[in-house]
Image (cartoon, rainbow, N blue to C red; front, side, top):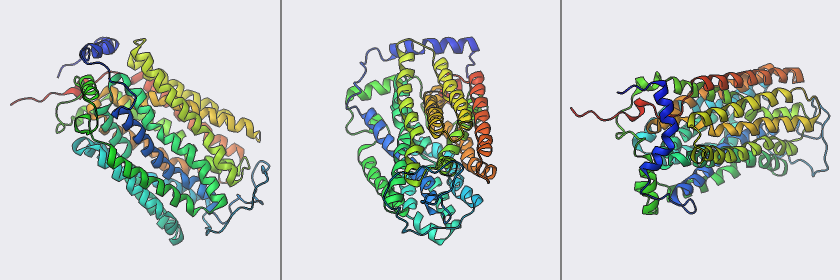
Length: 489
């Protein structure tokens, strides 16, 4: 295997767009409109919408599931309760007497299953194809979501078990899609296609949080799981009918688009699916740079994802109906900036010939340092709820920029093994989801503003460390071990 010096690697990164154009010069770029690759982007976006809607709806429903919930008219909070003229809150479903620690375990239990299928998801997607792995994984999450009200009735232990099983099903989703995009995403459209696909996660959060609040208010919390479960069943039907593992196996793709995609990827993919250079993968410093950045970003993301409705209710004094809407604002901004960031990242690489590594690092710094600053600031707004919501929204919105940073860097350094790499990084990045909510709830037992400031400081510090580490050690070129050729005996 040839070794490249640092200067060789940077030169290669600088001319990579030119080389790609030369490789595909005889084949015109296939239009984006009505194309199969963008069809895949939008259907996978819908899939991640379902995945995250099913993941976060419990965060809102939990406020209404508790016997001492402060979502009613007599609610207590650190700040004055914000009253608006609304119909009577419907409280027909059962409620439960779970203490703060139990709530933390219920909210974090999803990730104990989620971490188990990350690396296997990447491996099996590469070996057997991502279509069915992704589809069945989310279908399992849908089925267990529909069983959530029954599990809650049986007890907290059963609910934790169901959430673990949901996590096992959903754990294959990102590694499987990364493996699929390795065969579908032309390098100079990578940021655009992947941000469309993965921002379904933010879109699912944006829709699920306010809608869950409305469903809890006008129906009851059980319908949160039934309604979103039905939406997931519809997605599975569409996914099975319209998606294929690769351009070569797609029944409706045009020859022009198939040739364009395959020609653009011919120098980046390993020629075999059997050989996996595990030793080189695990010793790769650029991979560990992604691991650290991914872990750090997710600490803040998952802490807010699971506990923002609680913060809105217990500190800022918003009811269950208002809670979902305000909790969704940060993720609306995240979704919009992630989409715009994807367009800008590819524009910088394709038109202005910025090196991939520069684009990835710049977007990572903005997408991690920015959220850290505004998250800390949010802790000092006191009961100024307008400023608090604004700072939390800006914090999460800026996080969307990192979608075109470290988040898709796996495909830059090793497209053939992108699913496996994402499985590795996402395994580490799942740990914050497991322990973050538990630690945050243990630090906020009295629900005081200083306690929440501590939670925000911890998240911000971890975010900054991740951005610095990736900036020092991240790379933007395909690593030599990722294009290992078959040796003929």
